[in-house]
Length: 138
Image (cartoon, rainbow, N blue to C red; front, side):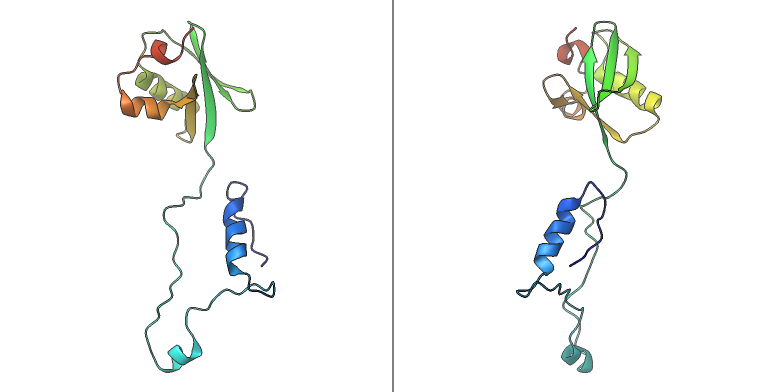
C-alpha cells in the first residue's frame, strides 16, 4: 500500500492502516463497500467507511515549559526558544496567568508543563484557585 502521509504528527496511523490492508501476497486490498452479489440482489450494505471523529487532525499543539524566578514567569518551547516572559508574583493565580499567556500568544494551541512534569491544565482541573508559587518555586 502506498498511502499518503497524513502529516508528521500521525505516522502511526498510516503505518497501522498499511499493515491492516496488506494481504498475504504483499498487495494492498481495500475492501469495497459492497460485493457484486449484494449489489445485484439490492441487499443493504453492511460495510461503511466513516471518519473517526475521536482523532482530530488539525494544527499542532505547542508544548511550553514554565519556569519562575520570583519576578517573571518564563515559557520556553521544547527547542529552548523563549515564547513568553510575564511579570508575576508567587501569589498570582495560575488561572489568571494562563489567561494572560493566551492573550499574549494570541492562540489556544499550546500546553504548559510546570516544574515536576505536571501540566497546567491538570493542576487547574484539580484546583482552579492554585497559586503560581505552589507549583513554580523561585
